[in-house]
Amino acid sequence: MTLTDTVPKESPAETLERIQAGHSKNDERVISMISAHYNIDPETVHPRENVLTYKAWKSKGYQVKKGEKAFRIQVISKSPKKDKVSKKYILNDAGNPVMTSRKGNACVFFNLQVERIKS
Image (tube, rainbow, N blue to C red; front, side):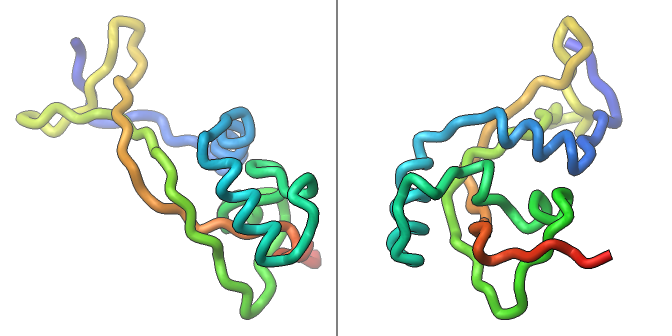
């Protein structure tokens, strides 16, 4: 086990790519919640494609429309694990940070709630 003071940060594009590659047991609940709210076909709701966080939409060149309210969903987030004594990040044998998971909430927006940023 190795310890380090810093770990590399993801760029917004890297974060979006990681999110879109994932799958969640929560997907059906998100699809149901959004399709019921907008009274649309559930087949048109695709988490991680047209249901994203504010930062994810921003990295794709979109802005949330004024007055729109986010949908709150439960997520499991992963972050680098720190040693309790030294407060340094723990690295595995390959030199990558050891990750830990925790439950949390995320605020997401459907594609009908955003518009392309005018340049």
